[in-house]
Length: 292
Image 1 (cartoon, helix red, strand yellow):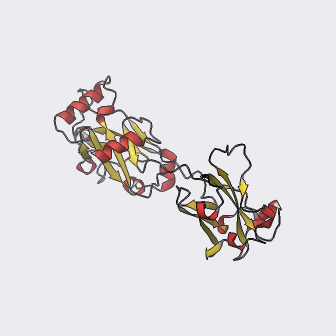
Image 2: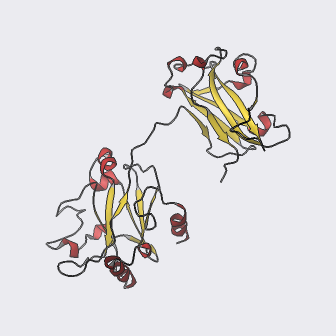
Image 3: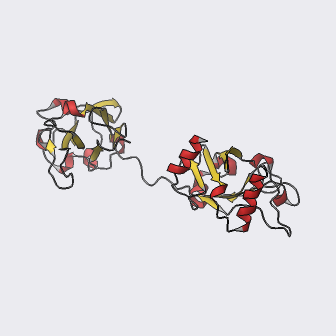
């Protein structure tokens, strides 16, 4: 239950009813991978009668079921149809029974494309919509026993991975950070198809107390010298078109006795002087104060 409580306290991205539903993963949901949906029934709006009746059902020890219609709804008779028989709302499919996680928290695990039998594009276009109910949801003249409707947004990737990245994502000045350059993703024609020995890094950095928005960075060397006088700035080709450069910041750079707070990396073709044609257009900023 501690894991679930932490999840609800920290992660809410991408949901219509943020205080009641969260997912694992919380964002960048891949509809072809496993998705866990968590619902906290106690967080529903109890001024709505159907939500209060649902909470009462939990208090009475009843099982909870997911009832879903988007990105697709299975027809009657399907193994994953929401309900069974002529009054499906009163007889939820046991396959859709949720897992009790403690208290009023219930979960359901699925792979969206497999569960709904649709492709990823359909998931992106329609998102995932559902509600929670007991096996007998009332209705047919009786009050409905159900949650309000929920929506889990399933959005397509907004951008491709940039050609320049770092590993790990969070570092301090005493950690080894690796800059990764994927020349296969390089959009700039003058920087494409580079070979071993052609790829270098320019390094600028800021010290504790300096305003990175205003102050000029300290430099390992001038931009024009990269690729000529400082061979240690060369990136190694580790796979075809994939180059890496690693450093421990406080050993490699001169912090002048102060902490280094941010590093700017520019990937550069070694033999091009200061021409903008010979550099990648994306600066990688490594924040050394961002460790959680």
